[in-house]
Amino acid sequence: MKIDLSARAPELVELMDDPDADLAMLERTYDRFRLVNAAVARPGLLLRRDILSRARRGPVRILDVGAGGGDVSRMIARRLRRDGLAAEVTALDADERAVHWAEANDGGAGVRYRRALAADLVADGERYDVVFSNHVLHHLTDAERQEVLEDTRRLVNPGGVVVHRDIARSTAAYALFDLGTRALASSFLRGSFIRVDGLLSIRRSYTPRELRAVAPPGWTVRGALPARLELRWEEPAG
Ligand SMILES: C[S@@+](CC[C@H](N)C(=O)[O-])C[C@H]1O[C@@H](n2cnc3c(N)ncnc32)[C@H](O)[C@@H]1O
Image 1 (cartoon, rainbow, N blue to C red):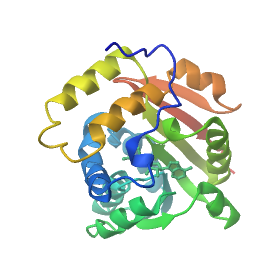
Image 2 (tube, rainbow, N blue to C red):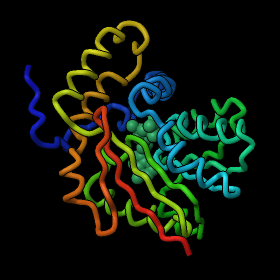
Image 3 (tube, rainbow, N blue to C red):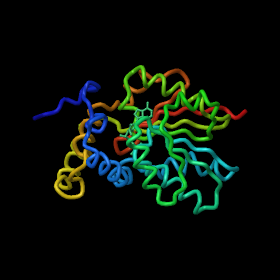
């Protein structure tokens, strides 16, 4: 069946967002995110461009919104420690199933895990130097997206940055993910939601042009290869 990717399909529901999802499959999905992120999301770019430069100037506070299994936070925490740079990394998720799994699999990375919304941290008066998300924007309704953008902007220190990273919807992205995961569906990805949810995610995702059209004033959208986009806010230095 040919999938129509000409418009977003926000009505589609990902299996991992079902509160009654099979827990073993959900946990295997959190575990497999690590390799999907390494192959698809390439968070090393965020680290090099936005985090290391700030961390070299002094201790940094970093917030990962919608951290899921927490692998991106752990990669960042480990790299900063390896470089002898002082940092506090917090992985936030609205779903307590994700927070429990991530906490149990920290493996000494020293990330702080918290079940909360960005709005709760705003209410607590928290501030960070780098606030980011990975593969979260496409999960949100229009109202949730507006709220998350407003809250994350309020969470950032002068001189800090907010970077919401996501998939960019395209026929090529869908075809590549379909092909790449088909071969692994009966082995590495078996018993996880990665393949089904990944394909649904691409259909729910924005193109750079669509994201620009809904971005509030002051936010910028960048597209990047392969099939990536970034919604950024930079807070002027105080
Ligand atoms: C596809 S997962 C991405 C997980 C992780 N960032 C990664 O890249 O592997 C999306 C995560 O966002 C979380 N999430 C969705 N809406 C959220 C919100 N408003 N606040 C915090 N977390 C949220 C979900 O619970 C889920 O764990």
